[in-house]
Length: 68
Image 1 (cartoon, rainbow, N blue to C red):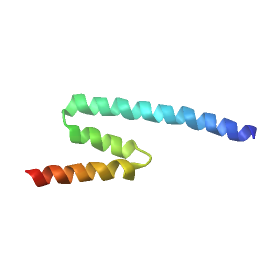
Image 2: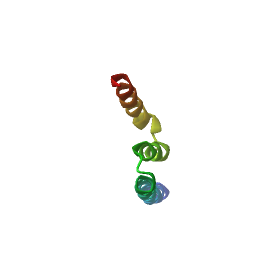
Image 3: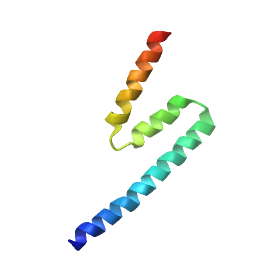
Image 4: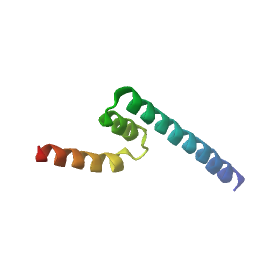
């Protein structure tokens, strides 16, 4: 039981670091390029469940291309 609690604590710490790093890199990409596609790309790559984030992004991109 104690090992499980330690594992959960370790995952919480690593998860919070991962999110912080992803947000910092996203902000740097925004400032450096000024391109929102780069920001979305960084978030999709860092997301542990990228399919959930990528699917709505792809749908919105397709709708945007259709309206042009």
